[in-house]
Length: 425
Image 1: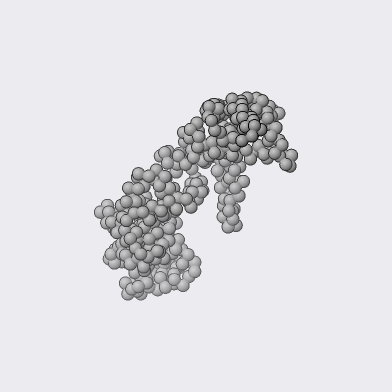
Image 2: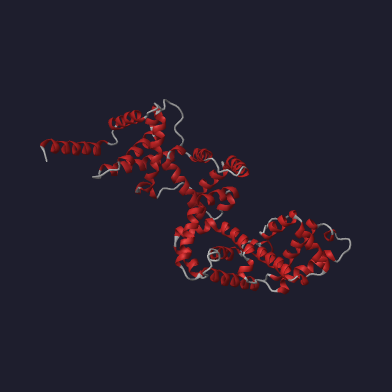
């Protein structure tokens, strides 16, 4: 090694040592801002600043920020308060079959964090940034990209930022990626820890939250199913694995919806009866007694009205037959189906195991007659029983169902009711 090479190495070491002691000094920060200005090819320094602020998301993994969360209830309430404009944009995007513009979601998140911002919150963030920078000064090796982000966030959160902005309004917290990551994780945590979380937020906001994590959650659930041989193991895994537990809670309603769709389309392959033929026939007999046996009943002539009244008869029958013991029996039947799906060699049946497990959990949602899982099973088996054995019907009911099957509108209605809608129609 030559003398010049040795001098160069020593010069770099001294320079690095100097940085270690001055990374938060006014001189160093002024030099950093000068470098930022030099990086702005278009002359727009603000774009470069925003880019560096976006890199601050990586600070979330540092010890100073890893345990920092926003107040859970306030997070949910602020999120719900500012959701209506985004909700309208979501609906318009769905109508046009387009994805929601990410910029719209950014605007929403900025509004939420503006609502939650307090001087105390800014001070907490500044205090943690100072702790992070102080720790970095004591380290031998540094991630200068992270340090620059931390310094820039510190500048704009503090008084220096106001001076740089020449007295203009401070940058919104929603522009700091570190803060937006904290917000997202605080929202996730609140959805799990606040008991009445679903009562605080809108259903559409819940679905947006669920959709954001859908792909990753389902990958985790599918990977778990590949590792187990018994459905009971899935329950144990959910209880012991926090990440799987959150994923499961987040996707339960989706899994139940998929169960309703799959159980209808795969009924012949499943070959599993959850109700006896006598229990199915009870609803058909009720329909005959209440409506079709009466010459003046409009259900004999108007197919849509007949469909509504038939569903009422199905629901009334479920109210009658679904005793606590019958609920236990139905849960056992679903457990048996789920286990058969889990150990099946059929690639179409195996994924159904997760849907079945979700359906079992959903059996306690509301009264049996309004429960979407029970309603789907009962109506699906009932319609298949009629299709496979028309003799179970008296001529009048057979004629009414024939008119229903011919009507495109009625087919849509049947699907709607089969999917277990629980609202009053």
